[in-house]
View 1 (cartoon, rainbow, N blue to C red):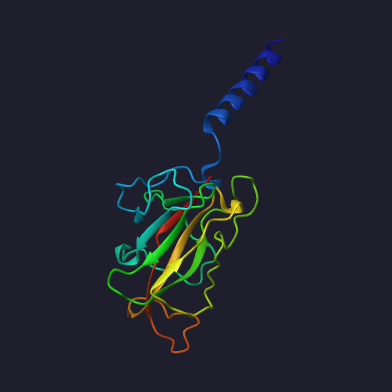
View 2: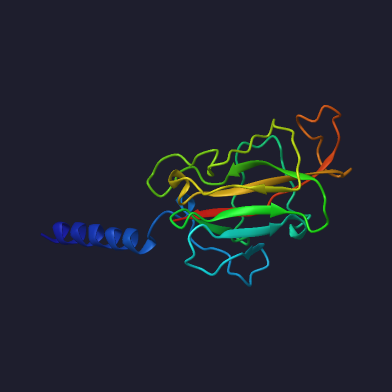
Length: 192
């Protein structure tokens, strides 16, 4: 009788702990950067709740310490660095531009977590527009278009590469001239 009571108590305690823990923080976006947070680079073109609104992101405000690592297929989580969040349900998207008029490109989006809110794999291309590392084309602005539903709950690091030589950067893969090009990567999260 005592053993049955103890076993029941252990099972109840385990269930309570699992319930209190909530969803696995490694499997979805938990906390987004607020508008006032330093890591939030979005300047919205419309108020919250406006379908299709754009996060206008000035690439010149990206931190120089968040550099790109070309060989990594995934990026590590940074607990002190909250992601900018884009809503898939509201068809929000990002427009990249340079206030200094520099030429750049969105090189790729590197997944941080493996699974989305539905338990499926986080897509390599979370937006309607795809960005491929080997497409070595630069321009003055880039628009992601809206996020895919499969990317809800996924977090990414964006690699934004400039056509500017930086001796501290790794050799730019796919550059026929093998230059060391400046590259930065802030965090991004896709929410419902």
